[in-house]
Every structure is written in C-alpha cells, then in structure tokens.
Image (cartoon, rainbow, N blue to C red; front, side, top):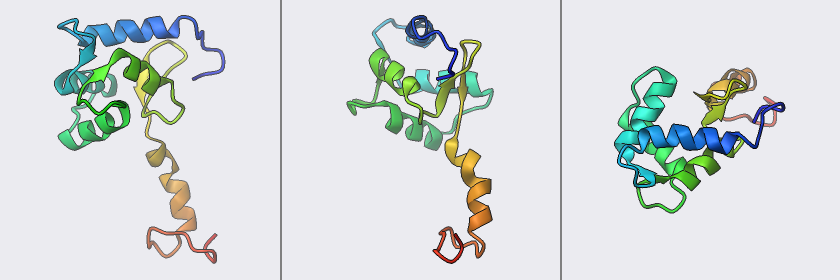
Length: 119
C-alpha cells in the first residue's frame, strides 16, 4: 500500500467496491462478477485465462467464489495484481510485466533463463 495511505479507511473502501459487484448481496462474487470488476478497473475485457489466473490468486479456500475477506486480504498483499492508489481507487498491477525488460537485459541469449555467466 502507498506509504501515506489511510489504513483505517481502506477496508471500508474495499467493502464498498466489493458490494458494488456482489449484486445479490450474498457476501461473495462469482466468476462473472469478478470479471466485471476487473474489466472496469482495467478498462479492458478480461479473458477467461486471465480470470482463472486472478481467481487462483484470490480464492484462498478454493470454492470458486471470492468472499469479502479473501478480496480484502488479496488487495492488501504487496504482490497482488490489484493494488490501491493514493486516491483510494484500485488499479491492475503486473509485477511480471514490470520486471520483464530488466530480466531481458540479463538473459542475453534469450533462453528464458539467466545463467551465472549472464548475471
């Protein structure tokens, strides 16, 4: 989370965001609702493969749904693909995409590995 982020208000903001997509007010989002949330945040459609990747990361108990506690826990992780901004919104963040150019600097032969000689 950003250093100057008000931690006390963040769970409330996440709960509001979550409740917008938990349209049936059952305390969880199904796959379609999660896909809508992610598409809204990213401004792009989310493929089924991407959705599975997100769901695998979020769904801690493996029941195929995203409960509020799982959502809050997921967004709160520094490694989450969904990160809060200072303004209190959420944005998609792919650390792999961010680090790929740096990785390519060291992977001189392009074999998708970094040998001791390359490093």
